[in-house]
Image (cartoon, rainbow, N blue to C red):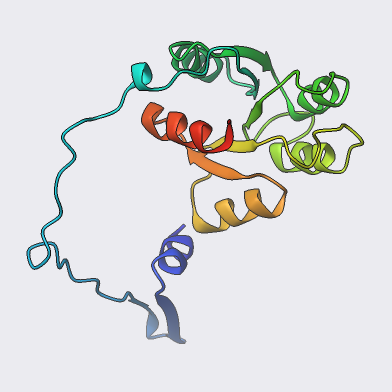
Length: 181
């Protein structure tokens, strides 16, 4: 965990150890100075909410194995008018999508840690399928795996974006808006 944070921040970890004396871990992180006082940034006068995003007529496929996370995501998405289809694992997601007609879904929201088939495997299976949208359907990771390595893995598996849990509705709406035309 520490290594992931240090890597994310561009730092280093070194270790020295001598038998009978002990071990020393040294963590070095670059300092990033806040220059906001020198260059003031105007604060936005409007905060966005679900009313600012209209996904009416859009159909989203949600792959999520946890019932509470399913319900939370569904409620957040339905506030924008989106229709949500929920599956419990990556295999169900892959089978439902690859068996659907072109245009049945506008985006896929994919958990990573799921039983039967995880999100990485499901994204790879979707991308390699013969479905007419296999290369273009937006696949967005929604996961508690939020380190730089996890984001890299999601993108390498063929996902378009990564959203960390707990879900920030604003971030979810903005990400969907960027991918759903």
